[in-house]
Picture (cartoon, rainbow, N blue to C red):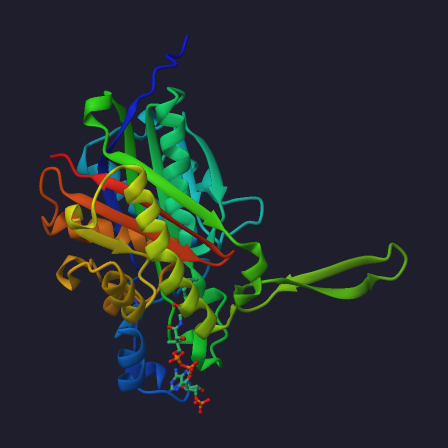
Length: 335
Ligand code: ACO
């Protein structure tokens, strides 16, 4: 009989994986009309990693990131109860999480995909924490992984400069309430603005003349950069404020601001709107670009490995992106 007590959630370990192959701004300027100076000034991105090689997919990156996290705490994969793979670039429309489950030998885990673009990791963390809080599962592997390079129009300079491939993993475990690290969350969706950023299915009319079926295909990422920028800069601070207020935490208590790594101007504008010192912004997008669902766990893993987080530090995590979706999680780090 499972306990119905509300459990706390601890972050046990994180891991990451990026492809070996990198593409610098100078190299991209040989593909489309752009320059290192334009890209760095407008986005902060210097280079991005791209998954190359035959039959390589988001699963390969997700597996490496997951094993990396498991290795750090010498956890047997058989102890994992649930795997949530946040991705918008699965290798199979029926889902890729089950293949990750098989490859890491987490044979006792239920596994499913969660699609919410660049907010995917935040939504997956919150989903996982609900299974932990109500006592259903003890150990949950949350993965954010995307290979947007497969879905970018490499002739569109307004989008192809932005994205990169990667994966990040986080192992969450139930704990006593006193050790809880996930203090609260705040989530939002506005489907009326979905056309600001999309990768839609396009139908070909009457592809089957007798059955009158409409078959189609997914093509490229389409984005209205200015609208996405305005959305992020206006809505993310509000989400953070709502979440902080619900927990009676003041802006001055924030130690780290870990936002989806979309663009350095967005990160700084959000910090400035909230009067958060720029020194508190965690940023690694210069090396990886926008890796969608992977960006938050990649940045978290890097900050953790650099020893940035001290006991009781308040870390504000916010994701935002297609949908449109956005949301915040407040973490209190415990050593
Ligand atoms: N190199 C050189 N010039 C370019 C490039 C490029 N790569 N891309 C666009 N331009 C040109 C445009 O053609 C335009 O030229 P024009 O004035 O002659 O028409 C000029 O630069 C300005 O273009 P804007 O689109 O107005 O440039 P802006 O300052 O808005 O910057 C950018 C574009 C970087 C995309 C910005 O709008 C932005 O960061 N938006 C947010 C995008 C984002 O972060 N998306 C992802 C978040 S959600 C998620 O992660 C899925």
